[in-house]
Length: 280
Image 1 (cartoon, rainbow, N blue to C red):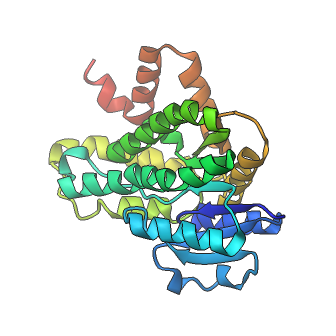
Image 2 (cartoon, rainbow, N blue to C red):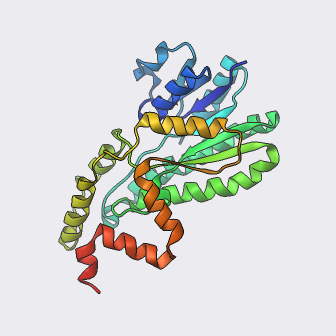
Image 3 (cartoon, helix red, strand yellow):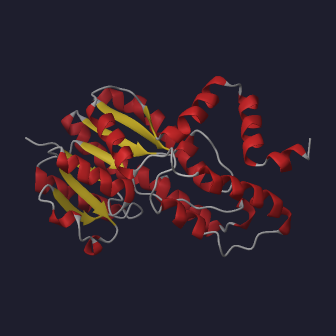
């Protein structure tokens, strides 16, 4: 009998690539999204069941789970992928912007996870994979609220993993680096209309120049991340974290090998060397 995975945020990017990969490997896929009526590609795959799920609306979550079980018999794995990034100078962000970021990226993960747990616990089996981010370990400037949401996910998931060991439910964290999708473009477009105090001008110029110089030659694709997700769900181990993207490997190694203050100074020198050095 084929296994089944439920994926949130499957309309594009990592979510869609993961749905396609699991289907190609013989899995059944419950591909969920906010607006399934707009999907034109996944609906043509006989292994994929497309349905509506909004991570901030518990009723839609339970409906998607119930429909998936009715369609395929049971669910073996969950990928918490739905999320988005907010960017900008922190003091310019509104309360609504901050709350919305946490409602989707943190409370959304919690909502879907809590809803699936009774099914996994009854089966005494299941895998929950969660898309975090490289910034869940390496905080970048201009995305402080997004970083905070991913730090929250990392802490929640790691703590949860110890609880769910008792129920034979494995928990995974996927940490992608920069991915060639429209995720970043959407994140930075959110801040374009914010009025930023002139005091930040030099910092923004330096930081934006750095981001623009990074390029994409050493980054992963959505398909690369999907393969990492597939490996994490099917490897049968209790490994917790998986890095997806060569661009963040050296930075995570630096985080692990330097003292905390050495690492802070390393990032300061990277993101705003002129502004930082002028204040020493």
